[in-house]
Amino acid sequence: MGFDPDLLTSPATRIRGYFHLPLPRGDNERQFTLDVKLDIPGRGVTGIFGSSGSGKTTLLRCIAGLQFCKNGSLSVKGEVWQGMEKTLPVHQRPLGFVFQQPSLFPHLTAERNLLFARKRAWKSVSPTEYEQIIALMGIEHLLGQRPAALSGGEQQRVAIARALLIKPSLLLMDEPLASLDQMRKREILPYLEKLHRTLDIPILYVSHAVEEIARLADHLLLMEDGKIVREGLASAVLSRTDFPVPLGDDLGVVVDARIAERSSEWRLARVQFHGGDLWLRDSGEAIGEPIRVRILARDISLSLDAHTRTSILNRLPVRVQEITADSDPAMVLMRLEPKMQNASTTTETCLIARITRRSLQQLKITKGSELWAQIKSVAIVR
Ligand SMILES: Nc1ncnc2c1ncn2[C@@H]1O[C@H](COP(=O)(O)OP(=O)(O)OP(=O)(O)O)[C@@H](O)[C@H]1O
Image 1 (cartoon, rainbow, N blue to C red):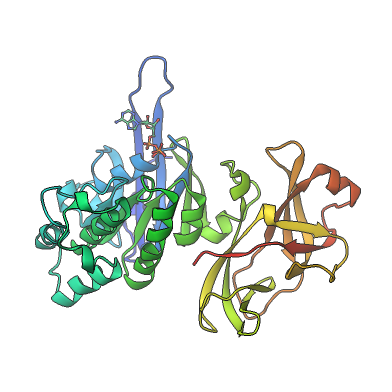
Image 2 (image 1 turned 90 degrees about the horizontal axis):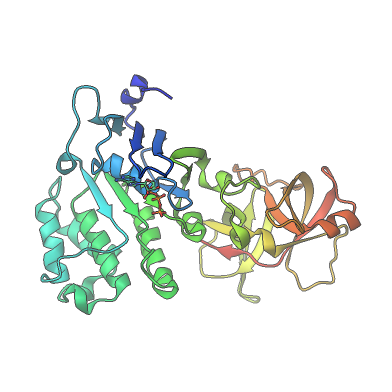
């Protein structure tokens, strides 16, 4: 892959770039080279996912200018940050950075940490915007505290507010939840979702937690060994059976859907997606509201007939599109195409099931077989 000057003639809606960066290693180690051509939407959340050492942080560092890449180029929504004629140093790039550790000034209160950022903002921050960001991160009651008096999750919310207060054109988040325990992660994820829905700042979000990516990302880059090996709509990339990073029990599909009906009697909601309807626990979303649900491969079982005398609520008629080997030799993965398709939704969706090779043989399932998918559990992720 060579330098592509076209990437600099970037439309105002895209983030485009190219980085070729060999990194020196010890004598006995294989050299790591970041070799990436980037062309992603300039809005929404782009997840960057990949195994440890695949180059996610190095890519963010090149975008931020923290890592100089001689053979590189970058334009962000039409503005050249690195090109043939000029390269902006880090402090001239209008970006916010949120790291794994919140890195607040320990001797300043949360409020003074925020004011420090506000003074250095790229564009002036009005009092209303200041209030809005504080409300968005739910930190009003924490403003008078020093970082040591805050929990890890609270510190991270202050750090995110601080990154937002500099009014960045691009927000880079490198494993922002990695240092938090499961409970704190669950606490902070809704704030990140709100951020995503409310502000029009493109976010590059590095994580190796599929749950976070499934919840937050609109677009997804999958990295392996310094390269982007898959790219596209997050729901489409996550729905492939040949996902290059073994996902184990996390393998599944992400489905964009809409609330179609709410039953107060059963406390359930019916959601409509491209492949039909699903019932799930009503969690208060209004009718018509878009939601995202995740269906894990391990939560789908298959049958040849429509068993109606079962406690399982969701049953969809499907056709087997593809059967592939699983990393576990006793299992196979199946890509299933729903037979009934909703004309009201546009995003095509398939399901992924993982069943034993024994069941595959006993039920004589082959490509093209028509079956019933019984879905044991559906989780709303957004
Ligand atoms: N300054 C450097 N000099 C030499 N090698 C480096 C340097 N920075 C990173 N590397 C190497 O580059 C590779 C990619 O590292 P990077 O931190 O970008 O991966 P990552 O995908 O973010 O990993 P993780 O998920 O573990 O944080 C690693 O093998 C790392 O050892």
